[in-house]
View 1 (tube, rainbow, N blue to C red):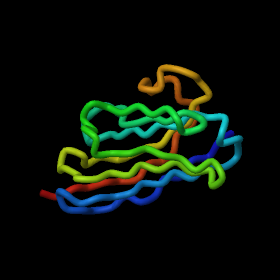
View 2 (cartoon, helix red, strand yellow):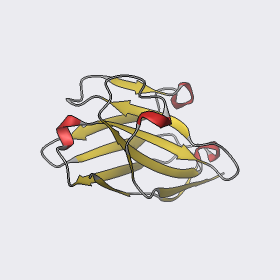
View 3 (cartoon, one colour):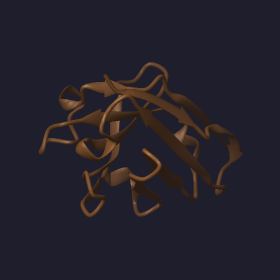
Length: 124
């Protein structure tokens, strides 16, 4: 059983940055690919970014547009999401998730473990 805890959310103005963290415990962190998803009120949870076990392979949603960077530190059992040039449309609860699958990281259904989420609010 893998336990995930997100942190780093908050209220910022448009154009500012935030760095989200997701700390993992209870499993072999390096054996899981990690993803970030987000969910705005009244909308489906959507894929944001994913990173492979060793951190060499990353994937992003089109709307990221080079503004976000996912990374991980396996020695610290933590995955990060650096978010720059935030827009009001980025307002959502952000969730990290872990999967032992080797593919389809953009799909929610392949993730076995989820955190509780951290709220990001971007004002205009």
